[in-house]
Length: 275
Image (cartoon, rainbow, N blue to C red; front, side):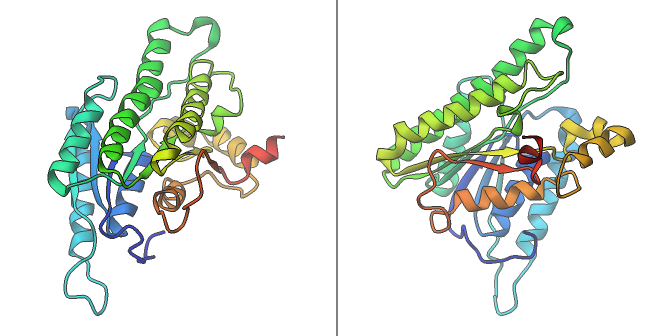
């Protein structure tokens, strides 16, 4: 999507959880590029400061860019908010900060999630519970906070959750992960029914194997990377920017006005190849 400046989201306001790295970061940057003001959530850990700082630098660079014929940049502004999505008030605070700064909320992306491979027989119960708290509880709490704000505004909106191809397929080291991503997809489907009367569009993106911090060990292993690439008809592992486009499509009421309860696979054809 880089370089495609249609200002599709000009004047819109979005909030994204887990926005300093990976998929959340790519979506945030694309939204900014398309004229959207964006509030991102992150944990605020010292080890993650480098990611936050570099994102702020990229956002500032986008803001400094001018398209030929423009006197000022049309890129959006970025706001960063610290918070843990497993806490029920984190989503409320994120939404409140966005509305306080820009007056409304149009788009919400529930992206924050974790994955740590583990064998079923030795899977630690705390890891299982933590995966639920972040991937499922965090999605619910934050989406609910966004929906409440959008209902109050009275002009609809778009809620997008980042599920996974793992919502549709099992994985030998994912007995704690696949059911959580399936829960996110199911949650979005029920939200689509519940919130449709408020002119909401609630949709899920199901990424395949994407190069992020969660998959960096696989990407460093030549044998594992080759195996993954052979399962993908397009012959390559996805990049985070491959998810930014679908997120832009689902955020735009002009591009996806009748998409509600959609599960949008962005996996290079992996799922159909495995059938």
